[in-house]
Structures are given as C-alpha cells and as structure tokens.
Image (tube, rainbow, N blue to C red; front, side, top):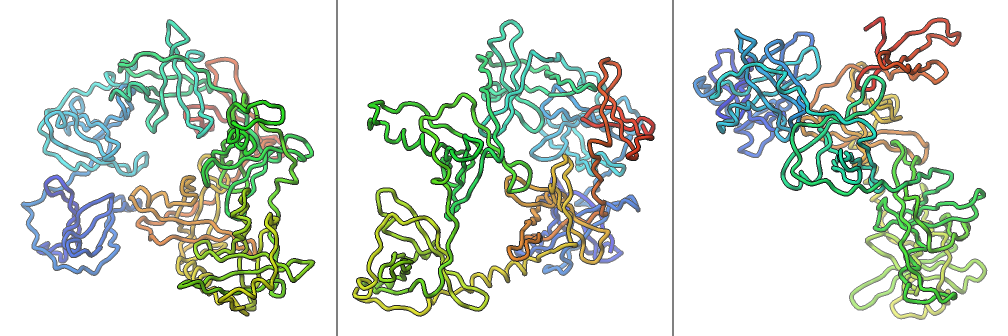
Length: 636
C-alpha cells in the first residue's frame, strides 16, 4: 500500500492508495491532527488514521486505527490535488519578536537566495503560521511545524501558491524593543482569592499612577487597552544573576494610567495550625486554631457548596442577625472574615490557606471539642428495625433506631431515594435544622447493618408502640434494597482496566512536583510507556501527546480501601499516539551533596557545585544561564 500526503483546495487531504498502480484510493480529511475517511464519515462511520514520524528512518508514516472501510474506494484523479511540500532547516528560520502579540515569526527562504523570504506570523487559535503578505491580500497561505525543538524538526507548507512577492530578510527590524523596565519601577502582585498574577508598571513621572497588566500564555497584557480592543503587552525576563526585568513592546498605550493600589498583606496558614474535615454530607469544614493546644478555633464553611472560598461561620451568623441587639446593646457591623483554600501539590492531604492579614473577627473563638465532627457509629440488626407505611398511592420506607437505655423509645428516619440515606426529619425541620443521617450497608456475608452519623439528635425520641399502632405499617425483616449497584461499580471499574503495580510508576513532574507524572507501561513491552501529566482542574492524569491531538486519554489514581494500595483506573478513550521509550526517574540530589555559590560581580554567573560522593573530593561545576537552568562547564 502506497500513501501520499496532498491537499485539495483549502482543506488537507490524505490519500491512501489500495494498489501500487495508484488507480483507486481512499480520501481522508483532517481535523485536530486526526484524519477521517470522507466517504465513511458521510455514512456516520469512524475510520481514522494519524501521521507519525520514524526517528530511525527519518521519515513520516501513516498509522491506520481502523482498517475495514464501510465505503468503496474512489478513482484517483491527480489533477484535483497538489502535493504538500516538507521543508527542513536551513530552508526556514524562527525569530522571537517582542513587538508582536505572539512574538513568533517564521521566515521561509528563497531556494536560491537567502536574502529573500516569505514572512509568516503565528496564530494561536489555528495553531499554524500564516503568510503575512498573502493575509494582507485576503488569502490564507499556511504552514505547520512538527517536532519543534528536536533534531527531526520540519515545516509542512500547506499552500505554495503565494500571491505576494518575496521580501528582504531583515531580522533586526523585528528583534528590537523600545525599552526595559527594572525594579523598583515595576512589581508583581498575586491575587489572594485565586493566586493569579498581575504586573504593575509605575508611571515615570508619578509613582501614584501605574499601568496594570494581566497574565496570559504569551506574556502580560495591559488590562484597560485590552478592553479597548488594543493589544499592549510586556515580557517578564530574568538575567544570569536571577534579577527580573520587563521588556516593553513598541505598541503605545491607548488607555490612561490608573491609581496605584498596593497589594493587601496576606498570611498563609498550614497544618497543624489549620485542619480540614469533611462532613458526611461532603461539606468542607475548616478549623483555624488560635491556641497552641488546639483547644480553641474559628470554624469556616464554604460560601457555596464545594467551594474553596470559605467564610467564618461565627461572623456570618452575627451579621445575619445584625438587626438584633446583643447583650451589650451593640449592633453588629463589619465584614465576614474570608479564607481561601489551595492544594499544596497533588496529594489530597497537603493543603494551605491564604487570607488577608488585616481582617478582624466579629465573633469569638469557640471550643474545639464542640465543633469536631463525631465519627460514624455502627448499629447492628438487633439495635434497629425497618418498616413501611402506605400513604394513598405512595409507600415509604422508614428506619427506627432504638435508644441504648430504653428500647421502648426510638428515633425515626425516613428514606431518601436520591441520596440513598435515611434522614431524621424531626431534626431537619427544627429551628436549628441539623441534618442527621444513617446509611444501610451490607457486609461480605450478606448481613445488613446501619452506619449512623455520630451527631446528637435535637429532637425527642418517640415511642415504638405509637409507630406500631399507625395505619398501613408493616415491619420488615430486611430492607429489600438492592446492593447490586456496588457490584456494578466494581464490574465497571474492571471493564475500564485497572492497573496495579508494577504496571505503572509515579515520577516527579518537570517542575519537580512529587507524583506529578504518571508512567503507564505497555502491556507487552516494559521498555515502552505512555506519559501522563497531572491536571489540577479535573484532578486526574492526562496523556500529554494525545491531548495535543485533541484526544483526552484519562487515568485516575485510586487507593484500595481494604489493602490501602494504589492502583490506576484508565478512562474510556484509547490512545491515538505512539508509546515512547521508558526513561527512569532522575535521581534527586540532597542538599548536603551540592552547594550554590553566588557571585557579587555581574560578569561572573552563579555557580552550582555537585559532589560525586560523600567524601566531597570530586565534583561537577555548573554555571547559571537563562531559563533558570544550570549547565555543566566542561560539557558545555
């Protein structure tokens, strides 16, 4: 089978021939780096293929994901297509430009004269380079880059029919910037609520005025100019000595400077000064301790359900009743103290709280023992009873839990089908509205038992005899509820492929975060693997290469409750990328085995000394350069 990559009009086409004579073929169209058979797609059938690159043979190849077509091959007409040209260095050149939004310019040189070229600009939304001269004349002439910053990097020219002329190659014109800003003429502020950064550049004549820039993927953009559909941005850089400075673009501001507002002082609290507890309903409850013995604390609850923005529960209750007078005849006035919860790494046990330093509580700290959520209580079959009651067309399920001292009294619970819990309605309908729940469970032997919350009832128990005398009451030996859902969940997780050790490994991420990278080995070859990175937004691992092809291949890290062992639950989507060679995790060097030497002179960079053994007789010497990296002196 012979394959060739071509284009048809504006859209790309992949032609796969059925015979060596190239008379009949299948035509594929491209979307998000994945090719779909055109005729099968009209029949709503998914026949796909992807393009890859063989490093050993130094050539491209096509991988067919589904080979059996539902359509018939088409006759190949070569006049309908134009072949796409693949270009390698030195046929093109990249430049970073600080006077444009993306700062990326691609030059395609004339094949016989490097002083002439076509200038391409990068478009983030399309993920391609477009010829600037053709774009002015309203024609899309695009190019794509593959294997960027690698030895096998190449450019694929999707269109070669330029309607513009070659221009002179003048890189100096685009690499010049107007100005640099150094400290203390700028500062970076971090928002307390979400951790987002913004850049403040002071006015030259008046430091009470400034320009505010928000952080984006390509740099900091001026906020007010962005609202006026004008792009003015800066680039934050660092020199060899670790000093930060700002490069300004040559685009002038269309907005006026704003008043400078200093960043409010913030404090960061970590365990054991704070403690996060989840209630049985899944609500977050944060305790900020005010004493060393943890006997007193402030209780914080989410502003909204399952939110990381929390408010002081005592201050909130006082403000809700601010129209009522307290014993001291003072009316409560002020603001609720807020705190923001953040994860510290990928582990669920590691977290910290950031809050403003100048906040004052309206309430007083309360005793810790009164605010703790009690542990659930296991109730056996002889300590409760189940019954049903017919009410017109409905039949409700109830639970009665005997009092420990007197079995003639009990607390009555009603079954909620949505939450699948028994709830005490008497406590829920009271003024304080306490939600007390109980859950029916089944052990390995098939015997039922109740797992009740340890919260104390605020309602009074009722007599068991009054329940038995009610109309339509039938006492049940068993609940009749099906526990097949747990079995279905276990079967569904098995169908999603559960991986246990040693079929996967957890490594540090590129930025050094522990367990920030997941390595899943190929079934038949341990030397091949798929690399996943941790996504904070979805709280899962995603395959990096598949995500570039717009295919979300997910993996979740779980813990077995019985054995406390970690395992990986793979998602439904299959990989469309090829596995890579397995690389063991690089060893970390402890603080005692290296040292950093800071030079006072600006001409001499910072040094890093890494010892080869505990005796510290021999070492490797590194120097600090750009992108926060140390390079070995002798290897360099």
